[in-house]
Image (cartoon, rainbow, N blue to C red; front, side, top):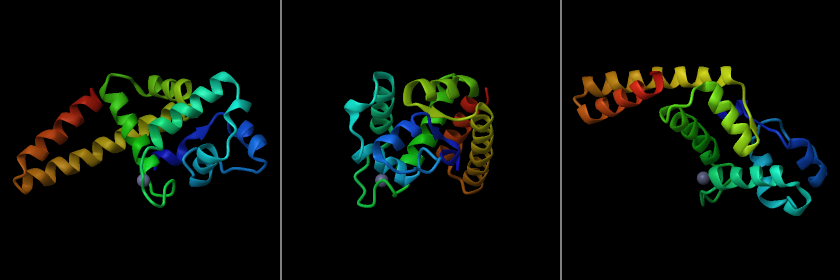
Length: 150
Ligand SMILES: [Zn+2]
């Protein structure tokens, strides 16, 4: 999963404030729990605070009972990457945008690999939808393919 490749830039700082070690993955439930409930935001400097707040706002908005272990943050992250690509950003732009806005570090190559994989999945969706006569789904998948691979 693409979310497993994302790391949080301010992880060390957050570890210092919470007093315990955190996993490397930004979307690990333990990390999200730490930033949503155990951080004293006044102890973070401006940029890091803004990034953590943007992270929470963008990825931690569900009301699932088992949040943040429900999978929603990871799905929101994957969806955002596809949206950014469809809005014209390439994999390097996306990597830069994620670190600037949310403090999420991810290699451009990992973003590119994920986008290529998404196109393959969409191609399969398109082909199956055609076989089953679900033309609307096939057209929607084809549109996403065109936007991602242009
Ligand atoms: Zn959820």
